[in-house]
Length: 228
Image (cartoon, rainbow, N blue to C red; front, side, top):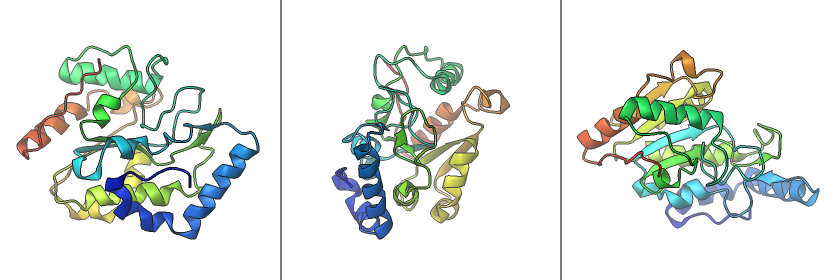
């Protein structure tokens, strides 16, 4: 695989990347790109969630499914788009809930880098996608890598919040047995912020205030959820 594993995650991920399955994933991605297929996000940004949020600094985990599949959108952080890109509908609903929950105005930008730098791990289950084809790289081998990352956080003694939006995120968390064992973590689960499901329990779930109350109570400090 062409991506460089951030230092803080190497002990966790190096063994996974040494497996035949991971090597197969790397070879497959290279072949897809050699065949002229556009793969998002671009090389060098696919592990941005891990690079921006070191393992020992994770305070909150938000799990996504796979990257945005439109040009110029994905940059390695779940639910986030690069500055200057139109805010996608799911993220717009996240902003609506953020406003209702904490009174913060809806941001004009969809870049969530400031969250990542504060210890919010914005991790997709699958870290690449073919242009225009949502879910096209699911089942190709990313699961083992991202499962290992989530498990490493779940196994930590540091109280952490896991925000699970939708059945896909809940299923991923259920694969990490440490989450069930470690009662010192907080799990906040609700419907997905997608326009198709946001009115079925996402709106009104107040994940941001719940996360901050828990983190402050456990001496880990509140997250500044504002997006400038």
